[in-house]
Image (tube, rainbow, N blue to C red; front, top):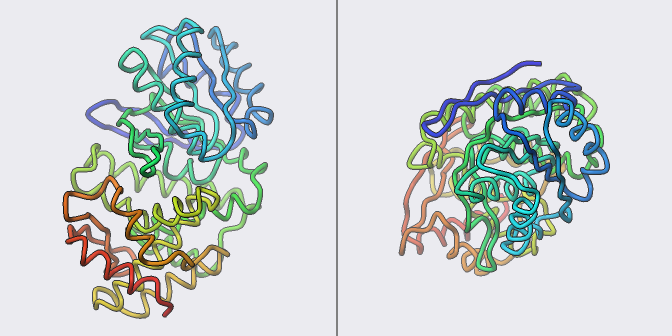
Length: 358
């Protein structure tokens, strides 16, 4: 096991990455969060696989454990499910010193994290990610949210976990499709700030069976995100670079009614933005082609059939919009991106240019 220390103004904590460490969750929770009661939150896919092991570890660490299983899928990230979860936490008698344990992918982490942030104005949360996407991105950094009818992640809070327990062995039960989807965020990190990682993905696509390599990739991505979050916890500047591919990606995701996975949408959004940047002279054509090729090699979408007009209309509800302007992350080179605030009409040209094939 290896750990990465995250230090923010709100809280400092460790991200523990290893193999066969799910059974240590109780010990990590005890030392980082304390408390007497724990609410274990998972979904209908993950709870049958790992719920008993994590619950046993929490009980062995002295916790009185309650549990909630929510339906799997992005549709669960809504205000109704949040309200039901908060009621269950209250019924279980959790107090200000107690802890929520989020066992699952990004949906569970977001929902349970937001519940922890709002219950009694904030109690401890331990994130236990079980998808690659959650391990490399959503479990670290304290962003929690649910979706509204108007758009994705529009209601939320910054609430740092007390610790993160990432057991790469949990990825064994991922479907190949879900693993592929998760790689979309890994590719994003390579384009954003890690040329060596990107070149590694060019040479050899990431494979679900290579757990040593996956562990190294998780650690590498967590360190990158740690550096960004430590410098900019609340997304005032540098942290906005983590939104690379997300503005168009979120629009694609919403238009699919969340049937298309988040990582796949980010990958498609990344390719669209790279093509637009190449056509605007912000990066070279070869840069856009390399990004397209790596995404395609991982069998992820490099574009979308959604019309530019629908993508634009969806983007108008994006939380990165500021009046008649919107923040976008443009590609300059592999490992180099830049945040720009552009007028909405200029953003529309990015969509038009990005949706056309190379």
